[in-house]
Length: 123
Image: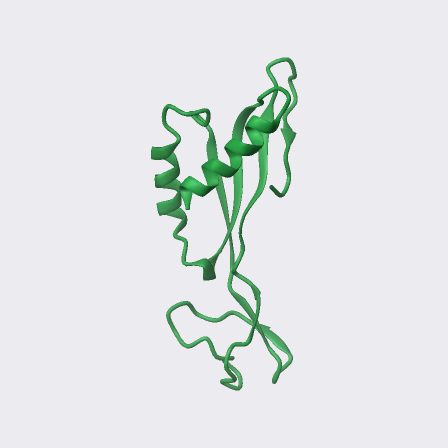
């Protein structure tokens, strides 16, 4: 997973007319993706060494698992590792509204000649 992240960022970085200085990569990781943010952070820190990402921070925002019960017509927060059924009526989880996200939200970067940071949203 970390390798795919680095390749994606490198492809974007190399496509720029002047390669920018990246300072932070912002990720959105849903709780239902089975991606452990601590492990992802560790792997990124190891794999960025001696690359164009040396010194770059990885900021991970977790999104909760939110489901919608069509029977009760309400959102609920299923507990990970337990049954995912609606807590009110026990209807099986069918509609996940949040928690499956796994994406680059934005990249903070700057150019050597500029003082202000820029953003590359939604790569």
